[in-house]
Length: 130
Image 1 (cartoon, one colour):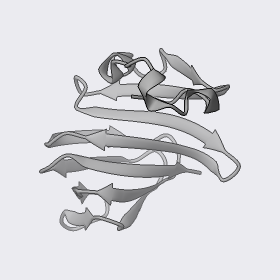
Image 2 (cartoon, helix red, strand yellow):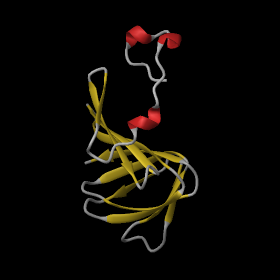
Image 3 (spheres, one colour):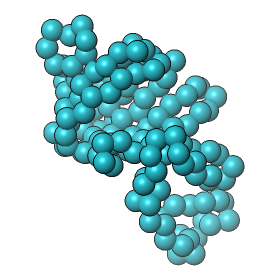
């Protein structure tokens, strides 16, 4: 259940929301408005990777989750990725072998580079763009 505003403090009065319907959008196709904040919800790889983009006073971010699997991404901006829960096995262009990053660890990917990710359990991350 989502709390939409301060007037909905009593959780029993909040209507249920089907969160999975929020993630059916293809990247860049759906914006969802919660309390005057715009979030762009993205779905990749048949809903195996989901993310929500947001901007605040600290910069531009994406928070997301990944199902177990193997994925390849290409960056359009510099990215600093922090694993918040779980683990990601990353193969970057200049790494001689894949590197494992888990809870609280971070790594950087330069813009315009592809990298591969292997996920063995559901994993959450925060990405800061620059």
